[in-house]
Length: 303
Image (cartoon, rainbow, N blue to C red; front, side):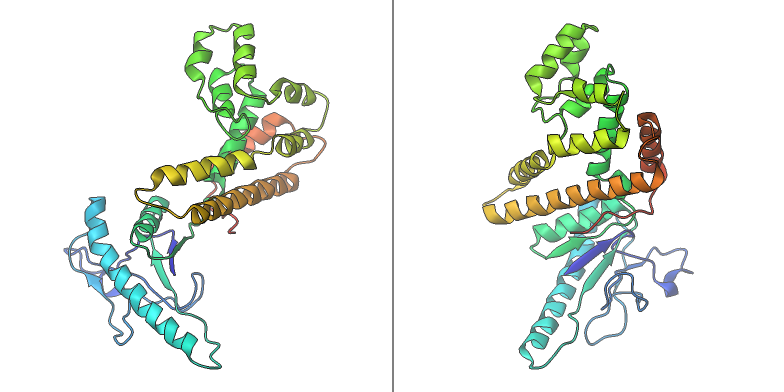
C-alpha cells in the first residue's frame, strides 16, 4: 500500500540541505504508518540502508515528475509486496505488514501521486492533512447556508440548485440572470429544476432554531443519493478502458460514506461551537467562511 500525505513525494535529504547548488531529492519511505516516531530519511531498499536520490533537478513539468518519481515507487512497492507475501506464507507470523509512504508538500501533489498510482495499478490510499473545511461536504453545506441567508442572490441560488441540496441536472445561472429580477420567472425555474421546497425552509428559519432547520434539511433532502450517483457517473466517465462496475460502485459508496461522516462531524462541531437555541444563520455562515479560509488543522474522517 502507498500512503500519500501532505508534503511531496520527495523531501530534501539532511545531508543535501547544505548543497545550495544542487536540488537533490529523495523519496521518503518507512515501515510504520504515518504519524509514528521512527520516520527515516530517504527511501531504503530491502538490503541497502543508503537512501535513493534523484540526481536531476526537480522537474516543473508534471509528466517529467511522473517519469522521475513513479519508477522508484513501483520498484519499492514490488519489493514490499514480496516481503509481505513471504510473511504471509510463514506460519505463526504476526508481524505488521510493510508499508510505503509517499510524502508531498501540497494536497494537489498528493492527489497527483495517488492518480499516477491508480494508472499504474499500484494500490494506494490518499491521506491529506487539514482538508476537512475544504472538503466537498463542507463547501456544499456552506453554499446552502449562503443561499438560505441571501435567497435572492442568483449566484447562490444557482450553486445550491446544481448541488446535492437542489439536485438539479442543469446549472441555471444564465437563465436566472436573464429573468431580470422577475420573482415569478425565478420561482418557475426553481420549481422546474428541483423538487425541494426551499421557501418552506426559509420560512422555518424565522421561527425555529437554525441548527434544527439545517438538520431537517439534511434528513429530508437526503443529499447522499445525489452524491453517490454523481460520483459513480464521474468515475465511469473518467475510465479510458473497460472497467469493473462493482469496483466503481464500491468507490462511489466509500466516497459517499465519507461525505456523510463529514456532514456529521460538521454538525457536531457546530453544536460544540454554538448554542442550539440562540445561534443565527448569519453567525454560522460567517464561521464557515473563516474556517474554510484559514483552518488547515482539522482532518477529514477516514472511512
